[in-house]
Length: 312
Image (cartoon, rainbow, N blue to C red; front, side, top):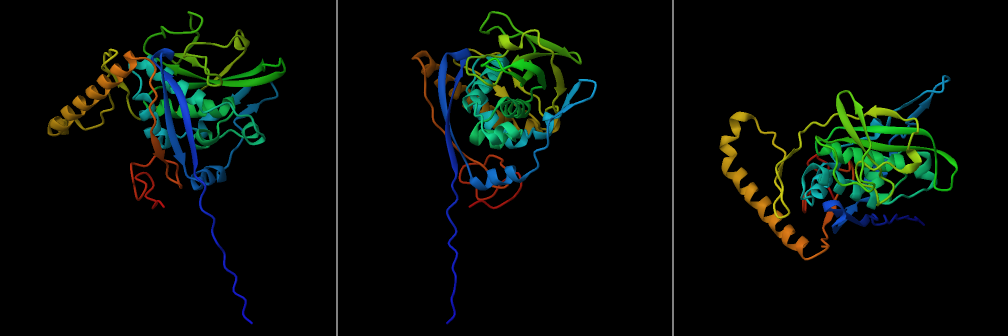
């Protein structure tokens, strides 16, 4: 008798998460629902996760958190989150920071042992280095310059010795909204980087947790952005933010389209302003990501515009 064995493939278990975050320096609350295919997580988890910290015999340290940065896969997510901001670059930096904080500080054997790639952290949460890499990737995707700040000798909430990682983000002006009324920044290579703490929802850009005060830190300049983030003067009911990469000679040909985009963005800002005046607003959106490379997909996309892989 011939025995035929059949194998039934289990359905892919996509990861869906609803992340709550705040804009306008904590005034308005929003929620974004994202969906990441399990195959995408499998891809990023299959990559090597080398150690990001090296300690030398001299007692000095060097870091390589930049090897985990992937701004391209975070481009659409970062742009979508930043679109909620209404008050210029500080609000953008704080809104994205709140979103990253909202992914959750999650300490497991996997997140503690390895530094995660951004898609992994977006799906599962992570510890300080994972959340810092996610924030850095999103801010670089938006055109901001960032650095990693590594504190080798500090303490955790229980008072035990530990190390810590956070991000410094360059702003063209000092932040005006902080928890303590002042801000902490580092001047590196001619740019001022304001600290961004990713591990708790209470911190705004410029806030340095007391446990890190006067602690020795090492910095690592992250990859430079490939686009320039342009923020115009914003009001509560109108924010115009553009990333323009068209060659100068083609701008005139696209002027009608450009004007339509300006009008559309103005209307969106107007509606957000009306909702904001009524109090806190909850908005829900769903996103899909490429199972192979992790890039965000357009609505009902049959293939990934980033890597070309056909989607299920």
